[in-house]
Amino acid sequence: MIRVLPEEVLREIAAGEVVFSVADAVRELLENSLDAGATRVQVALWGGGLERLLVRDNGQGIPKEELPLAVERHTTSKLERLDRIQTLGFRGEGLYALRQAGRLRLTSRPREQLGAATVEAFLDEVRFYAHPGPPGTEAELKDLFLHLPARRRGLSPKEEERKVLLLLFRYLLHHPHLALGVRADGEERFVYPGGGFLEAAKAVWGPVVANRLLKVEHREGPYALEGLLSRPELARPRRDRLFLAVNGRPAEWPEGLLKAVLSAYRELLPKNSFPVGVLNLTLPPEEVLVHTAPEKARLRLLKDLSPFVEEGVRRALTSVPLARALPERSFG
Ligand code: ADP
Ligand code: MG
Image (cartoon, rainbow, N blue to C red; front, side, top):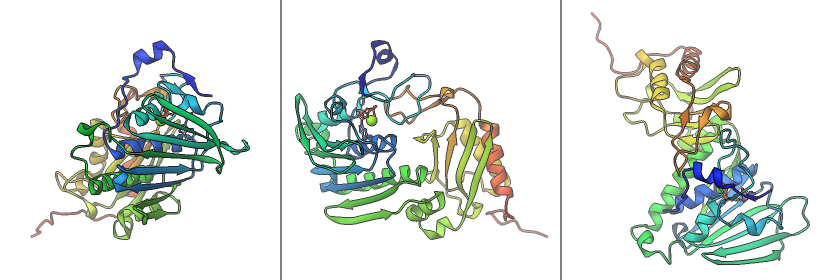
């Protein structure tokens, strides 16, 4: 049920979801699809998404009597308690921010509902009508920032498209079960049928990288660390392919956890280099604070999970014989 957030909750969440780019818009829509339990998402962009973008999912849909509420500010069906956030969205601001950014249209249908309904919203205008449609939700955003020239300035279709793909890849690595299709200007850019971590890594990074990844799977009580990490020979000078998600939410690395990963590699990696990989850390939702930053990427963990993470990585690395990477030592 979609409801308006109570005043005391609003005071605590660092509010103000703002959409600055096509990728920001796609992230809001994709997170909504994942929260709705979608197993298939199709994304289509025209003009880098600045002209038009579509995100269609096969998730649970929005009942027609709630659809008009979905595009209002601070309306959400997700927030139960601020100290145990289980979903990617929770502020009820995503769709509201999108209708400030461009012409939003949402057509949705829960499986059990007979027909679909549509709500169109742009700034203060809202239109609502019945409309045929399959189960799931289709969101369209048109004319992004057309009325906000300062925000539109400097955005190029090519660059926006590139950023959208990077964003989708990032989410896919952490949610590899999701079947994903991406089209741009009518052409297919990416197709992925859904699978496990390794299939997603192969689709995103290619087989050469995927063949050098080791499985990480470590559990202890309510804690889990799952994903893939590279054999040391794949080390990179930058951290640009080492991704963490906490409870399904792509996150910046808390420093302690990054140290834990590198410390498990200790002698295997040259100094100032990083493995490639994707790690999903799962923990009880009350042990992670996610409402401190608007983009929700910075998290605060309430317990020190470095020993757990280090142990999980060490186990993965000792599961197979590994040679030390560079630099080669001279003997004799
Ligand atoms: P939030 O995600 O923080 O709840 P949003 O403004 O993004 O806020 O969405 C408002 C509400 O609309 C959600 O709580 C959800 O109930 C509904 N909703 C939005 N997108 C979808 C979707 N793709 N599938 C099902 N429900 C959706
Ligand atoms: Mg949302």
